[in-house]
Image (cartoon, rainbow, N blue to C red; front, side):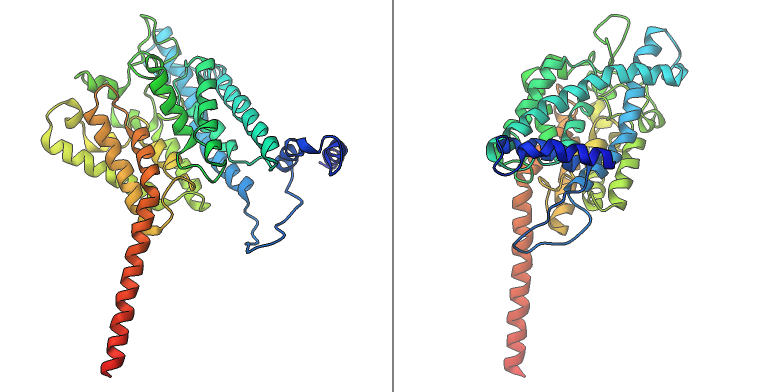
Length: 391
């Protein structure tokens, strides 16, 4: 590490104050802070001295994403190979063959996401004269994890550019965005390229061919078909879907990491699942169609609901900030997520739209929570004054 430190110090000299490449200092500083602890501290204003900085927070989230990512790569390969070879199930595919096939499919998505997103981040950092933020370390990984495995790379690149430019930099960059950037990318792709983001033939590699079916559970239900997967299959993740949204088990492992490290809000996650369960129970009481009759507990383990609640709804920038607001915000994310997937058969996966909707209303929720607390304190103060006057 000392050798790397010396080489970086040598490379930084032309970027120092007064040097000819000073304008591009944010670019070289980004590599430095990625490898080493920043060598600067706050100089003025109120601040908290803590070992947990933005880089460590982002790396914690990346670590929490790894179980779902690895399983997603395996499942992407297994879903394709078991049908290609006409096997009995995905578990009949040799583990390393499935993982290798999936990695070949997924790594280009990750590479495009980081190359396009970080390029734009570097350009804005140099233009605005500030350091490159570590926020895209997570966003760049989240985006390919919530896309179909066969999405054309140029479509992914345009979606990433839109998310960074319009969903993030237009509001001032990391910490200023009102919408989750990863979901913004998916929403853009869904409306710009609907044939590549919806339907029953896109969720498995080469699913458009006659021999391979990419049909999801929610897609089958929307067409009134019977579900061919059990609760255990859906919970573990042996089902078609976006790259890393299929395994609720791996997602919950990631949730545990976020909660134990206090990076993610357990209130939002728990209330989100409660809200989804409540909406599912309400629909079960009516049972007018296949989606309404779908068992409420199955809603919790299929589609992107679990992934969205754990990794998207808990975004500390776009989520509610107050304790009570987090309960309300999370509950409504899950509640509306199931409502949208049932009421819109053309797009049975609704957690994306639900979270984006609640991102917009999160400040309003916090505002009314704060105002309610202020009103309660005013009433207690008025009551205390009245008691003093009568004493």
